[in-house]
Amino acid sequence: MKLYRDEAVVLRTHKLGEADRIISLLTREHGQVRAVAKGVRRTTSKFGARLEPFGVVDVQLHRGRNLDTITQVETIAPYGRSLGVDYGLYTTATAMTETAARLTEIERDPAPQQYLLLAGALHALATRRHPSSLVLDSYLLRALAVAGWAPSCFDCARCGTQGPHRAFNAAAGGAMCGDCRPPGSASPAPETMELLGALLSGEWSVADNSDQRHRNEASGLVAAYLQWHLERQVKSLRMVERA
Image (cartoon, rainbow, N blue to C red):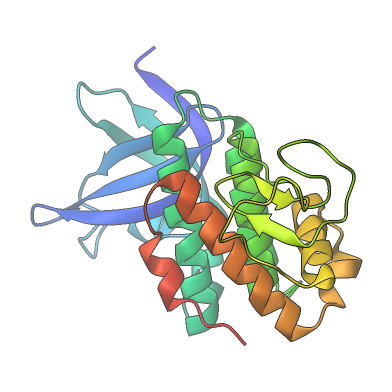
């Protein structure tokens, strides 16, 4: 069928011509979709404000040869309104959507979990449920895990020896025992490794009670792990404010 409907998170927008926009969406059932929203930059547009980045929408699209066309939009959660007025939250959300766009570009058949993870992370940011840096790092780890790149935070990623271990190597898959540790591996504090495991599994009681120095160390490891597997930097990650 040429018409289809889905839930989606608005990842980013680009101007097209004088009045249109190209909207990048991460949908629940159809992966990443790029579609034209005609006339949304006009003041008379019926749904221009509903297609701002970070918003969760119910959207109807018409299949096209190169780009689909958005025909109807209903707002589910306008997270962009609350995230856009706070620089720290805005840059954090931007890093999330950039990562989601990259992951779903390189996955042949993106799982619905990528959509659910991103929508849940944006909700946590918008409601200030947890510190934004923890929400970001948890999202990055879990999105990588859904894509098939879950890091080991306890047992040795190479030989499986039971941990905890005192080395972490992004290229080797995470925690490393003393025998398998490659040269140049990081030596994070035990509390940092525990925090990484909590962020990956969603143990927020552990994450929320962590010290700032361990959060900072964990963020560095997550960024290195993300860059290794994406094979390029997430540009907006450099703009994220860290406490």
